[in-house]
Length: 133
Image (cartoon, helix red, strand yellow):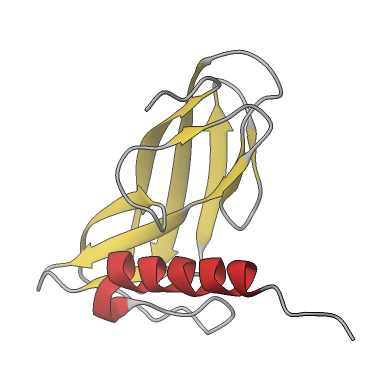
């Protein structure tokens, strides 16, 4: 019989808690239909960890598009988002950014969205390569 890896389970639980803390009450689980946000004031590309992002060469980070409504409520768009990147690395249709295998620099990640009566774009600089403390 195989022993459960409690360290991995603990890390997954902490990651989920971090996502919920960053996303707040407007959080929508992936796979759920994306709610309509007709009164979007602005949008921002975020990670579960929050703050600035540095991705070591060849590693990945999951990005999310967070919208803020005119009443200051927030939510994560899970559909209607088109991701693109310039300056190095790649990004898939779910917002998973992968840094280039070598080199140091910055990528610009862009997310275009359309939800309800609102549409727009958000940009974020992502540092890749050597990540200092």
